[in-house]
Length: 148
Ligand SMILES: [Zn+2]
Image 1 (cartoon, protein in one colour):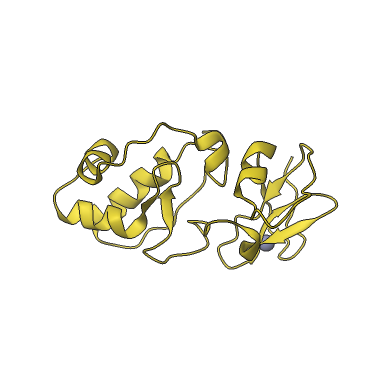
Image 2 (cartoon, rainbow, N blue to C red):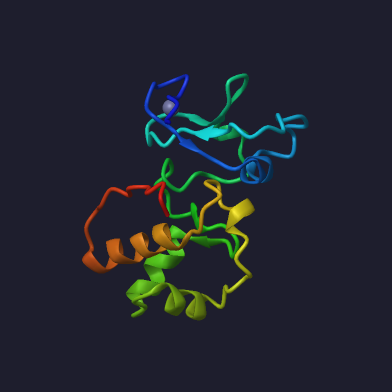
């Protein structure tokens, strides 16, 4: 059952509370510790996490959301802090998969995507997407699959 974003009205996705609490700025002291958090996936909307009672914008987060911010400085892997620009550079140097990019950059931190990734999901699908985008050298639209 999808809920819609209170700002843009686009259907959103459920996010586990651990990921919400980790990704909100430390200056936000009392986020609701509850389990009905959603995230707005609309690339054009400034809302990040929301619940029935509160909503936050992208400015309330520690790091930019990879699907709302196309800049090269945006993290794709939040555990090892690998940016979109670093992935592009690694592909230009011949890397063709996630492992090769991680090895080249020597960024192989233990996976903590369940809390550190803003969706609370593994970064592997978006990481792979960025590599394929560079290999094909054409813009693609990232589609988040809630089943993964
Ligand atoms: Zn929205």
